Image (cartoon, rainbow, N blue to C red; front, side, top):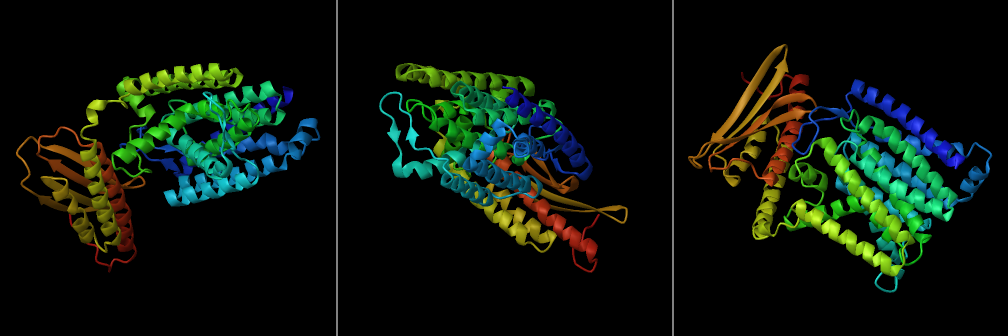
Length: 494
C-alpha cells in the first residue's frame, strides 16, 4: 500500500505543478478555448491544455520505477507488453489530442490514429474474448474478438471526449472509473493494476483542483482522449481476470455514464439526420441542467452521484453470482429508464415529427456543405456574400445581412451586404452571429425571420454557426492579403 500511496502522491504533485504552469503559459500565449459558440457552456475564454498535466502526472511515477530498484519496480518491468501498450499507445493518443487542441484535427484523422492504436494494443495482447451473459452461458467471441476490441477502445476514448462538457465532469467520471478498477485490482491482489490506477487517480485529482467549477483550465482533447485510452486498456485487463460470469460487464458498468451518453448521441443524430460527429447541446449533462433547472456545479454533483451508483453496481456484479447479477442489472435498468424519461429522451410525443425533421436536416446539411464550399473558394468579400446569400431562400429568411469591419491605419473601415425578401408579416425574430477570427471580430451575420417564430431551431443554429466559422476563416485570409498587398482588390467602404 505504501508504494500505491507514493505513486498517487507523485502523480498528484506533478499534475498540480504542471497544470498550474500550463494554465499560466496558455493565458500568456493565447491558447484558449473561445466562448464563441452556443454549444459552449462557459462565457469567457479558458485555457484548454490541462490534459498535459494529467498525462505527465500519470507517467511520472511509472517512469520512476525504471530508476528505482524495488520489488514493485522489478514486477512492473517484467510486463513488457503492458508497458509498451500503455506508453506507446498513450503517447500517440496524447499527441493526437494535443494536435487537436492546438491546430484542430478532423474526424478522419482522429479515428485513423485511434484505430491504429487499438490494433497495436490487440497485437500486444489487449483482447476481449468473452462477453458475459448473466442469464445463461458466456459468449465466446472467436473471430469477432478483434472488431469488438477495436470498437471498445475507440468507443471509450470518444465517450470520455464527449462527456467533457461541464467543469470537472470528465475528470470526475474518470475518477469513479479509476476507483472501481483500483478496488477490483486490490481485491484480487493485482499489484500492477493497483499501481496504474493509483497513478491515474493522483493525476486526475491534481487536475481537478483547477478544473472544478468555476474552472480556470480545461483538459481539452489531450486529457479526455488519454483518460479514455487508459481506462479502456485497463478495463480489458481487468475483464480478463474476472470470472466469465461478469467478464466485460464490470468495466461497462463502471463507465456507464459516458458510454450511455455516447450511445444516446449516436442514436439521436442518426434518427434526426445529423452528422454523427457534429456537436450539439443535448448530451445528458446539458439536459440535467435544462430539464432539472440546476446550476452548473449542481448538475455535475448530480452526475457524480449517478457515477457512484454505477460504481456500486459494478462492484456488486464482481462479487455476485449469476442470479444476483441479473437482479442488479434489472434494477439499474429501471433507474436508467426513469432517468431517461425525466430528461426527455423517451418523449413519445416528439416521435411523430422525427421523420420530417430528419428530411429537413438532410437538406440543411446539403445546403451548408454547398455554402461552406463556395465560401472557401471565394476570391473576394463579394463572392463570400454571394455564397452566403443562398441561405435566405432555403431558410425562409425575410432579411439577411453580412457585415465586415477592418482596422487599418487607425481607422475602422466597413462594408455591409444585405438582401430582403417578402417572407411574412409577423413580429421580427433576429439571430446575429459574430464573425470572429480567434478574438478578433471581423464582422457579423444577421438573419431576420417574420414567420411568427420566437426561437430558432437548434439544427439551424448549429448550421449557421458552421457557416459563420467558414466566413470568418475566409475573410481573415482575404483581409490579410489586402494588408500585405494593398494593390489587391479587397475593398472595404465606410
